[in-house]
Each structure stands twice: as structure tokens, then as C-alpha cells.
Length: 400
Image 1 (cartoon, rainbow, N blue to C red):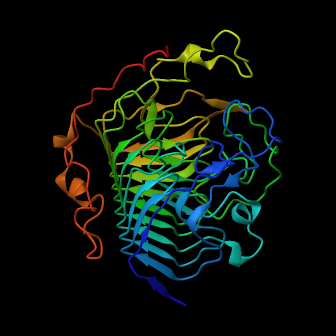
Image 2 (cartoon, one colour; image 1 turned 90 degrees about the vertical axis):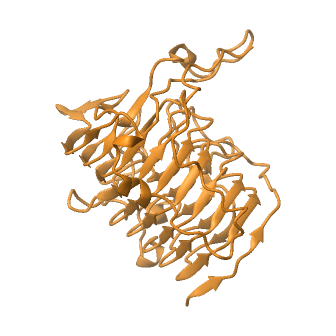
């Protein structure tokens, strides 16, 4: 069945009383969680969606306005297949604009074809000023998926990452790669088959003013194995990322914990300064100290155009335009004589001094190409075409 929804305006504000911050839209709820120093916990809860579907097939969301919303704008849970999210506007939303799949075992290791999230398309959407309250949520988050196409979207004014793909830091992959400092193979279970990540593509999207509040961010952020082999990689091609918040330490194309089997081709990074670490201010007298005092690392430089922490490898960089081709990793990993990331390939990449060194064909092809007739022109507001001058490039001021 194919259902095309008419234009609608979703409005209002709702915030869950259970709210608890966690990366990538999903949250930690309740008391049964041990100390987590580096950001991995298996038992998460999805943030509520204003429109939420499970096992949805062949639905088209086209020309709609998602505005003034708590939670996630549009949530396609387990088993979404053959759905299209096209030429919509997402703005002023508490969490992610769009989420596909989930973090449960039926998503990462489905026992039946009906549970696989596959053949979904996200194209031509304008997404800005989302993740307003759940600040460590991505504009678009695809947890697991097969043949997902994310194409020609424009995403700007987001506090963390524009697009995130993958979950589990490698612990859910075949072999359970420990892609997080302190992680141990098998701590989330024993897996001999990979998640259903295969044939996914992130093509010709435009990211502007991302990482506006948090650090350790990426225009495109990945975790875990992204294909079945080097012959079946996640393809990240033709994306243009500009104007990250200057002081936000980050990697523009951030292949993080356990990321493997990815090809990055003809992507552009302009006006994205390195930025710095910022763990927050020191504790005050009398404050408890449940974790090590990470604030001592504040203001250290952090990030580059490419990089990741405990990245697996098998990643190729082909024909990209950026300021440096060095892979930045604050936490390399060695096991059985192998240093990770391994098997990084570089060919025909270009070091640039500014946007004038980028072929216009790449700039013109990235981001939304047309405005849908159903959305008023005064709501379809695109970011500036030229990178703005960066003024926030230093360390955040100390708290008083």
C-alpha cells in the first residue's frame, strides 16, 4: 500500500518527564546503569516520535511541515521498508528530525526479513534548528539499515551532528570489535553475523553551522561496521560541510568507534576549524566526583577533517576537498600486533585554501534543489551560500 500524506503543520511542545541525555536520540532511563566513562551503554530507550511507525511499508511523506515539536519529528521504528521522506521542512524540534530503526537486537540482528529496516529514502528535506532540547541528537539518525538513501538534504543550525549512522561501537558486529576506550569484546553479547548495514548511501547533502553547542561532533558521524565487506561499503559522496562552530572540537567526516567499510568520495570541508576539547568547568568545593576530572584536558586542540576514536578501518578517501588529509585519532587501538585504524586508503584528494578551490559542480549539486509548492517561501529559508567568518575559535570561557 502506498500512502501520500497531504501538507500538515504539527505544532505544540511536549517534553518527556523521563528525559535523560544520551547520544544519538536514545536515552538512559532508570537506575540500573553502571558508571559509563566513555559513552557506551547497551540499554537505551528511544525518544518519543510525534509521528511514529513500526513495520511501516511504502509510505510517502512529501511536502509537509514538522514544526514546534517535542521529541523526534518523524520516527520510523523497526521494520520500516520502502518509505520515502521527501521535500519536507523540519524546524524547532526537541530531538532529531528523522530517525530510522532502533537499538534493540531485533534491529541489529533481526531474526526475520520483516524486522529489517530497508529501502528507505530521505531526500530533498530542509532541516534546521532541531535537537533543541535533546542536544546530542543528530538531525537525521539511521541506526541500522539496508539500502538507505540520504540525498540532497540541507541541514543547518544543529547542536551536535547533522547525520549519524550506526550504533554499538563495533560491539554488535561480527567479532565484537571493542570500538570504545574501555570496551571489552563480548560485553554486549556474542555475535558471529553483522548487523544489516549494506548498500547505504549518503549523497550530495549540505551541512552548515553544525556543532553549534556541543563538541566531539561530525557533519557525518558513523559507528560500527557499515557494510558486509570492502566490496559493499557505505558510500559518502558529494557532501559539502561548512561553518562548524569554531571552538567545537570535532572531525568533519567522523568515522568513530568500530567504523568499517566506508568510501568517502568528492566530499568538501570548508571553514571548519579544528576546535578544542571542553568537558565543562571544574567541580566546585563540595561537589561529588563520580568520574575522573576530565576538565584538565579542556582547551586542547581536537579534531580534523577526518578521524575517529578506536576506528576499525577499511576506509577509502577518494577525490575529497579539505584542508588536511591527516586522520585524527585521540585513541588509537592495538590488538594482536595490529594497530587500528587499519587499511586506510587515500587517492586524488585535494588540499584547499578556501571555497574558491572547490569545483562549482560539487557546491551546486549539494543540498536541496527545489522548494515544494506546498511550503510557503517565508518558511523555506536556506543557509547562506558562502562560508561566514569564524569568530568563535578559542576555548570556552571558564564558568564563574
